[in-house]
Length: 332
Image 1 (cartoon, rainbow, N blue to C red):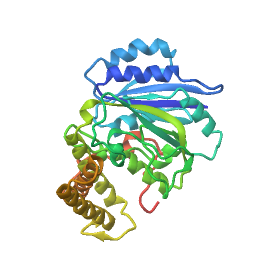
Image 2 (cartoon, rainbow, N blue to C red):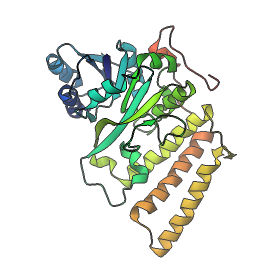
Image 3 (cartoon, one colour):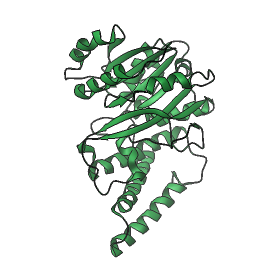
Image 4 (cartoon, one colour):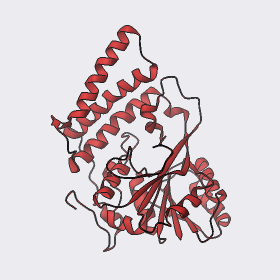
C-alpha cells in the first residue's frame, strides 16, 4: 500500500513544520509506504528552505513542487498529478495528523471496493472561543465532525468529503477529474467550495466512500478567525460558492427567484426569530448570531446566482493532463 500525502501551502512555514512533524511521528503500519509532496503555492516566506532542511528526516520521501497559479485547487491538482501511489491523502498546512491516521487508512482500504474515506477535523484553538460561537457554524473554522460511528458517504450523509482530511484512490481521482479553479479562494474572495464540487462529482460516479471517525486531524484555529467580521464574510462567500455550483448542479427542489425555496424559508424564519429575540432580549448569543449568518449565507447565494461572475480559468482538466482524466458532467 503506497500513500502519497499532498500538502499545499502558502506562507505558513511555522505551521507547515508542525504538520511535517506529525506526519513523521504517526505510527506507520507494516506494509505501508508513505511519500509526502509539499506544493508551494507562491510562498514568499522560507517554505523552500524548510523543505530542504527537513528532507533528510524523511529519507527521500519528501518532495517539493512549486505551483505559481494562486489558489488551493491549482496546488492540489499539481500535487495530485505528481502522485504515483495507489492512494492519495490530502491535508492542509495548518493541520496535524493524529498518531493513528496511517493505521486508520491501512485498515479502511483493506476493503478493496472502497474509493475514498474522510474523517474528523478537530479544532486546536489559538485563543478562547467567543461566547457567540456555536455549533451551527463551526465549519467556518474548519471543525468537521459527523458523529462517532462509521457511515457511508452518499446523498443522506450529513456533510461532505472535506479536502483537509481525505484519502482517495488514485484511480477514482483519475475518473472524477481535478478540483475546480473557479472556486479558488483569494485575498478578497473567501470562496472555497472546491471540496463540495468534487464531492458532488464523486456521488455522480457512484464512487464508494466511507466516513471514518478515527481518521482524525487537528486544525489550527488562529485568533483572527474568531471574529464576527470573519464569520460574516465566510458565510457570504460560502453562499456565493454554493450558488456557482448550483448553476452546474441544481438541487432537485423547488426554487424561488433562482434560489432553493428551503434557503429562503430558513432565512425568513431566522429573520423573524432574530427580530423577536432582539426585542425581547431572549435567546442565546449563539442562536442570535447563527440566525444572522443564515441571512448572510442567503445574500451570498442570491449574489452568486444572479450577479457574480467567476474569473476565467483554463479547463480544470488541463491541470492534471493525460488521456485518462475525465470531467464528468451532470449527465455522467
